[in-house]
Length: 352
Image 1 (cartoon, rainbow, N blue to C red):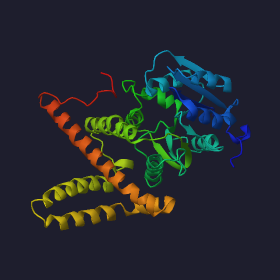
Image 2: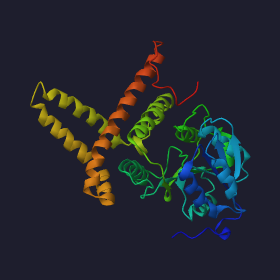
Image 3: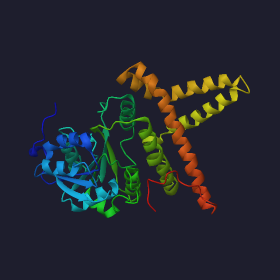
Image 4: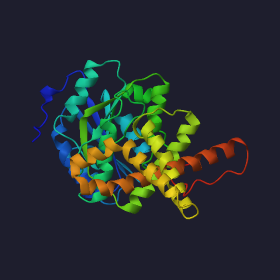
């Protein structure tokens, strides 16, 4: 069991400001606040931005001792985090999502790293390997996120708002989060790209881990993954021309996207040319080999039966990621050639 953080564990010359945006946080936010109670001290500032909640989330945070700012109408986590950053007094801004819980040594770890690495501008952590929601999809998605971060390069190229810390002076100098993202989207990734372009360093600290409590269902997952991640990320990649082989953009993932579309094509061709079945089998084996480390990870953590359930969802992830990139690429070049631009589906993730 994690021991509560003592103020003696924190470097006295650094004050950490924990900033949490919340919109109708519910039970997950209650658990988040419970994990943060140990950090309420003179060495840690806790700021909660109640982004238009109607379920009493702000009042609950205030009762716990947090500094709460209420926003009448929700404007999204980017705006909420910026508001929290501007009123914060700490040297380090530690952004936390309202559906995660922290461990007892999380804040002291962050303070220690920034103290010992004065040239470090920002750091990000990882979800742990014990997601809060018990259903298959939540376990799969959050474990996959854990695997992705745990196997990535420690020199990161993006930021992460669920568990990310940054020096306050750097955050203000870079302009904070892009508030045109009005939904939980890729505002943290976009911030990370700007940080890297400006020459700042971001470190992925794999031992700083938080527990994700979100319960994913098929429709909510696909909507978030396609409309709030894949499509806007494609737009960001093309506009910045930044294709670092990091996290979800690894070379293995890119090749897997190609193989998934090749598999679909070969299966469709079987009806006309039966020998394409052998092509499909070869591509299937290629996909399994290409992602063998991923499936071995899941098998170790949750067993063979769970892993067999993972595979179709994993391949679906490659499919909609690839399809979103193709759609975004088409939109991008139609716009450049001054042709009628394809609409962005739903158009809900970013204001103009």
